[in-house]
Image (cartoon, rainbow, N blue to C red; front, side, top):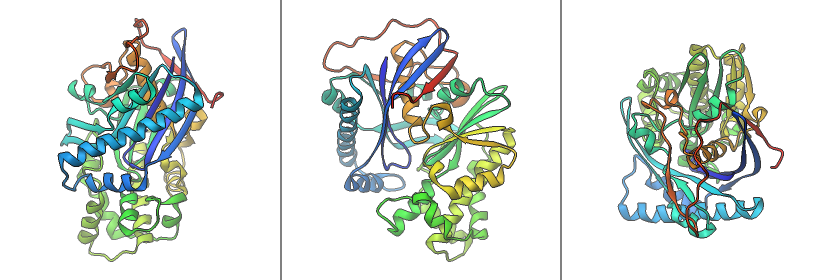
Length: 389
């Protein structure tokens, strides 16, 4: 079954896509990555999205327009991926998270926009969307959903392996005697916010860590940032731009009572990512750390992690057949395969749900909705390859 997975994450800079051809081989699932890509949002659309995100106030009118415009953007990416890779049986659209409602350690709701009907209309293919909320209704956080992929992918690795995603938010899945997964804190979110606020470049992020590399860590500011109560919460837990946004950085600078230029600020925020991740990796006794997400391309963060974790084998997820830039898109394609076959697509130990749930809402394509026969049990492992990409 060929499935297109698409996601725009908490960095809200564009849409990652992956077409995966899944086949079941005994009790193992095999996935061949046929096509992958990343498409930036139109700058005007990204600017409107940023302006509408917390802590900003917005309107239903703006949300309706963004829902449509982002739906159009996802539909165009889907059409281009299908043109390049050939027909697919299902599209899975994560859409764009605009609010994740968490009260202390309880997730109460989540909102992803990017109307899936535009994708179905443009491609004629059924679309699975709104994939997080079913886990939340079962008491989970709806995040990190990639933990299901992580458990299948790393289950055969010895020691205590963990998968780390360095997107806007850093999240980790620990696959040891018991599975644990949660959002650690900001990876690139605060760095991106600082760069956007300063108008430092047109990209909205620190390309190759170039800005951080020229700065010096400000200890007083780092101490304030590390004092964030979220880090002390027990897993399962999740967070997002609702907490870690541009005003959060401004308030931290004021509390620290320092004057800081952009390079020093970005260097300090990069070190915050290193310190928070390294602390949790050490606490969990992780022996192998498999890293994905945009932060993999930031040498300042990666060298910082290797310096802080000298006993840990740190590798990119590419070595497990999941390209670091597209692993989350692959994860949502996997969720689509599970839903299509009547199987749960969550790891309850990772999200904190009472039980695993079949995820998502289906929008029919141009014809009747036809799904494969349900499977009696889930696969016990996943083998990915990039031979077709």
